[in-house]
Length: 390
Image (tube, rainbow, N blue to C red; front, side):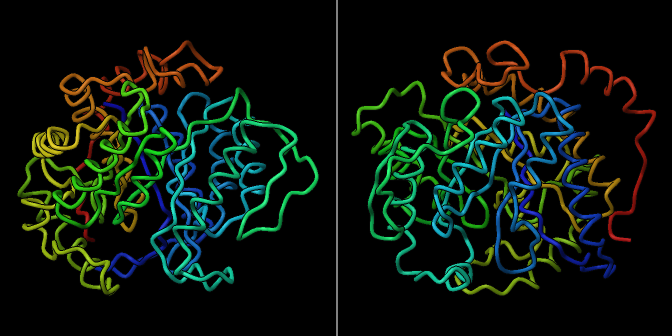
């Protein structure tokens, strides 16, 4: 299995302490987390996009460009690029620029977004969200794979003159994933194009996401695509990963934060049914507990989903040094076990996109081989016992 760190850049107060960092500090934390994730051997770092609510991720391309400047190996992804509200020409230009800056490390994750307020902000009708996504992806795909494109559609002015967007991507069109949270429509679109699917696995019971995944796989086969490239990514629940020496200690430390954030979220139809920490740990997708508990949960989901890429998000309302400690513990105590138990060809031998990054041979990502070992050697020296709700 491969591992991604995702930050949709929420900008929230710690619901227990009331503390909040400045906008500048929060954005710089994203860049520093990505730099540290590369050192620890994570495979990719993803930046979300929101244009409403308590988020500061309205310009993910800017943040990804900053990350590209301080990293050299880790893959860069979006999570998700809200293509339904954007101009595909601009998306093609902006993300190709990041692909060039990172020398081929970009992979896009597109979707219609999970925030209904974005549509009126851009003068669009929410009822058109699926048609917008399908039409705009069709144009984006052509802009990245063809030159001298002419095109006409329903939602954007026609390209009547032959158009070649610049810059071109670094080494052919980057791979595009499709992010799916609630609808069979996105799963079907991914399957139609032969692209990988990224299931949110955020707030619903796992059986609901399994329906989307099964539909994707059935449609993928029906369209006759190569089953070797039918990759699947999975999220890890709302609230963020949290690791402690024991599951009981993790629940004691993180439970008040998780429950206050869950209680404070009131979005009808989009609220987690896992309202308390015990329920979230026992039955929800949240990765909270001891390393063993987290490993068991990831592998239990893998047995159901068969996913290749596991995404995690840090609990960003906590002090930043504590977030980095969790990032490190997950890398050292969880990732090696899960990788051994759930191998994948994603970004490895047999994956046609494995060799896109210029920085190494096909399939190499993350830190150099001895980087994680060096971190592990210092791990016990630098660990500390924080009170996470202070």
